[in-house]
Amino acid sequence: MLDILCIGDAVLDIFLQIPDDSPRFDLNNDKTKLLIDYGYKIHVDDYIKEIGGNACNTSVGISRLGKNAGLCAEIGNDEFSNFIINKLNKENINTAFVSQGVNKKTSFSIGIIYKGERTLLVEHVDRDHNFDIENSSARFIYLTSIGNIWQNAYQNTLGFVKNTKSILAFNPGTLQLQEKGRLIMEIIETTDYLFLNKEEAELLLYGDDDNLSSDKSDIKKLLFGLKSLGAKNIIITDSNNGSFVLDEKGNNYHLRVLKVKVIEMTGAGDGYNAGFLCAILNGKSITDAMIWGTLNSASVIGQVGAQKGLLTKDELEEKLSFAGNLKVETI
Image (tube, rainbow, N blue to C red):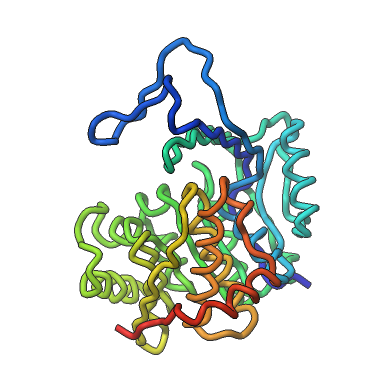
């Protein structure tokens, strides 16, 4: 029986590591543009080919922490799609709800990693996403971002959650937050755990992402604003400022980040969500879940790619034994 079913995308990720001292790469003065010499053959230090996508990353993270995770996603039927299936099988992910579109290729992204930051080149193949999860044994659902055609998948998920009274965790993508229609609002009303970063929270509430500072008082405004939309527990991550939670009992919590050497940030949020959800699946408290999420996220950003740094159960337990300085603060 599945502990959780993660619904969203699965893609191919390729990361190219560019040397910091590359003579063919540079940044403009305010570090807002990546400058590449045109027409040259450029040396790459290393590359990584990995599977990715928010739902895929989270399912792998939960599986490594010892829970039975399934993935519901639509992929292509080319050779790269076979790579995705094989990797999922190696990670012990249940693929019963992974469908392969006929004559469709794999969605992919190429990440250029230079001076500690990554620039992503992304292709999303349009898919119907007509997911049917009626026969799923999971009673915990994690719904996250899907490509351009997402409404049917979201509607089917909402119907399943209501019919089975499943627990729902929701991490909407930018497309869903920008639309902010009746379906999204109904899903949020049904959500037990709503995961957003600060910019996404502002986009959902205010229509843009440049309203509030990262002061705790402003984050509390976001938390209470989101709570008014109906979700039971609100989780906001805010980069170097850590994570914030408003739980269903009205308690406000803050946990700072764990300071580690950052290699690149891909998958930090997915790692946090995987750790957080796995703690909840293990019957842990909200504050324990924040610690699990923080440790997992810190491990992810210490590696290239979204999955290499995801912790195993034994690795998490070892880190927990040395995590005494990670204290959740009531705010």
